[in-house]
Image (cartoon, rainbow, N blue to C red; front, side, top):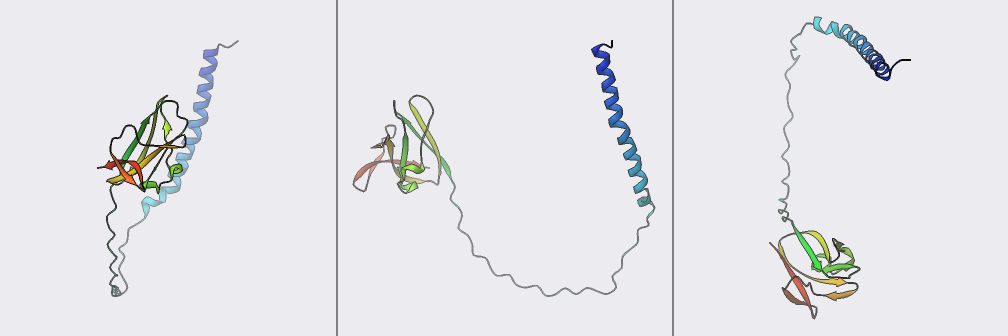
Length: 154
């Protein structure tokens, strides 16, 4: 009976032969096929008549687009124990709390990152359906008769 090591060596040699022999034959066939390319003579091409280019049109001026504002990533982070759902509503999302839902990072911390241009933004946290000021942000302002938190993006 043949040992496993000898059997693996024989299989490796057969695989090498099956791969290398067709590739050598293919390489020789390609060399023969493209051999005629080396015998071509290069000729100079001379135009039969002079070319005349049509006059170029004047392009209409494109309106200058105003520069786009540079975005910063604002981090909303709230630490509250026992919350099941935390959302943020603000003037950056038309006061729609369903458009920014925070993700639970650990047992107390909820986070979200939002790309915003530099500016001053008013927002309010909605924790399990109740509107609450951001406990980690002391900046507040009034919006539609209620006190809201303020975030300044620089």
